[in-house]
Length: 221
Image (cartoon, rainbow, N blue to C red; front, top):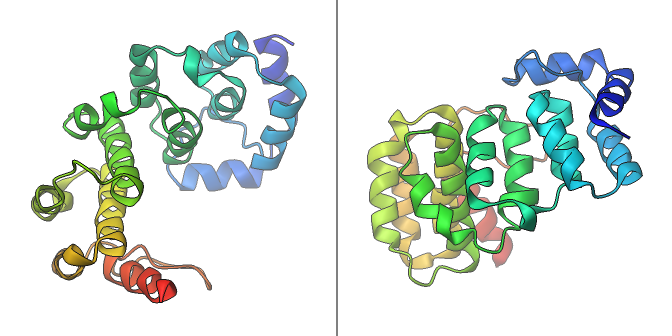
């Protein structure tokens, strides 16, 4: 199966409701609107195909890129290729797929973390803060958490929405996983008020950091 054949198959799976929902959530017009389950099913049919994945990514079509993420080989990407791909995808949903399936699985991912956090590119910064959130939760050794809290307090309000989301995640993870800094994390969340009024579906936890922190801490008891 070549890239043109894959695009035709994706187009045949288009769902207008999905397309409209993605566009409402910030996607560009270059997509068909394929359901996530259908993309996963097609990926299983194709299996791993790194060359095809790169061709699909280069089309810029969002559905094709999400399929590409599932069939590429992260270890075969160079650091330069990964950085270029992260910076090139502006739709948060697809960007988060790339982070979870590729960046997070890349053996030398730590090389990106601080570089991206300090990048002027909002999508690189978003991914850099995601990597930092992972370190905060699972491998905090060597992290200067007070310095991270200072940055979050001083910078998060003025960041692009894409970056703000993962900075907020880092703030929440500090409060959840590090009792010594919990009070300050809660205070920063209250002071900034970011996502205080964020609409949340029944049964879901608010992204407002104080609510998120307190909810997760209560589950630990």
